Length: 244
Image (cartoon, rainbow, N blue to C red; front, side):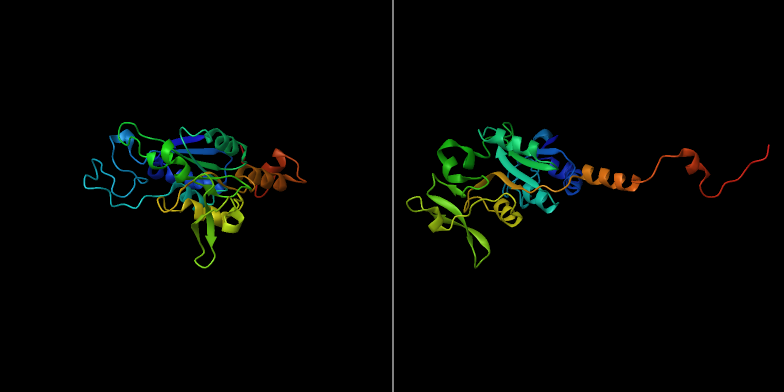
């Protein structure tokens, strides 16, 4: 298991990308606090536009990086999101542990010194129902106590928020989440928060052979039908005798 805070998007991003693209069997937990908390509150790659900090006193003009989109772009086969005090976080972590290959989990976590209550706009109890959509395999993407859902705009090829009347989510065209659908996973992690709720849960889970299994399989194939013979190996090719 590899853990790190939002600083890892710049410091360890290169290593993370190669672990993900190679599909090394490990779990990567990125604790995103949207600030460089260990270096006295500088804005970070995941800080929102307008973030005031010692290095951006007038507000950051950077467009923030999306860790989950980064992981998907690197070829990730397991992408999930949650937040530090969510009752659903344990189930997300269990799913990541069960996944064979590189599993990437973004965990929103407040920096109580430099970025306190940063995620209250979707984690605070009064707004949580209306501001979160939990992605659960085989279940409709509903939120706001089932009165709204996420549907696909087939003309724009984009997601849209729809109203659900009398619980009839099928009539509203609400999508049923499929963790193996990479296209929908991309759309979910790229949803702009505000017009859309924050997508949480296991967003993508579609295993493929791990780096370790592929490498060991390659070695086994190369050794098939051969026997280890050091003397034969040493005598192979050009040899010569040095006179005393």
